[in-house]
Image 1 (cartoon, rainbow, N blue to C red):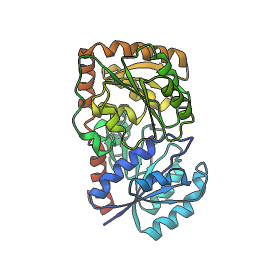
Image 2 (cartoon, helix red, strand yellow):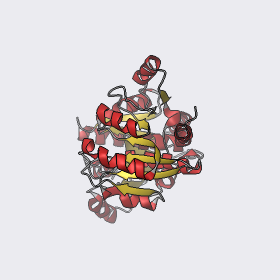
Image 3 (cartoon, helix red, strand yellow):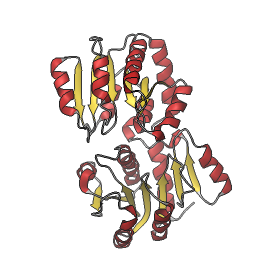
Image 4 (cartoon, rainbow, N blue to C red):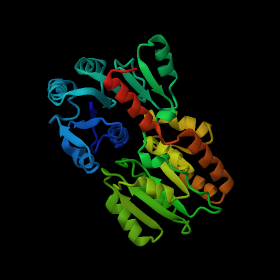
Length: 344
């Protein structure tokens, strides 16, 4: 049995997507017979990791002090006999990754392509992998896992897609772990004129707006609020369509076959969202940072359009399910297990 260290962070400033995709891969690593240890800077997300059945340790560093943690990380790798490190963070420097690579084999989940990462295995499941493919051609010694077949989703997302009903009645609204732009409340307000739609609003673990959403639900019986739920797949599959911020949630919605209206809240989301929209998989309502009110208005218009157009929803749901089959985490885990074992 090899031990895989997973170096990732999640807190009120960092999106939960990094941790969630790492837990999806960890779930499959355990099934391949690997031991897994999550390594965090601070204890913000420690309980969540433990609740999901994984071992976890904290380095006791403020997460911004990335370069200072190498001595502690090196000691941990030695003491725990870690044979491979899975790294998932946007703030890793070339120097940090080089130093980590001297400790053991390394794997990096990348969706920014900032530089030629010094890792043994690189995963880029975003739609924008042209630069990664170019680097692969220049350096065939590195192994790349490219494209949406490597989208690291939890196992429950590998099942059948939702049935497409004649008239949509249930809409999911999910805006990320922090909802920094208060989009959930804005979208709920914009959809208040559609009482026939049951609105399932997901409030993330670090959202500051949950109390407001619950107040809205108390006044409007068509709203149901979920806070930091562990089984988002169940809620997705109960819905006929969704409004969602960019990020890993979009891949989950694709895997469930849920027709989706999406919007951007960060630069790294734009390439993937663009590809979804161009392929007719999702409808793009815009970038919240440029025009929050405009995005909310357009999202509500798209929801109204899709609710009554089951032909359009069938087409979007089918394309999404074909694009993301939900087995990416298993494929990544297989490659990590081979790397840890020293086999090709």
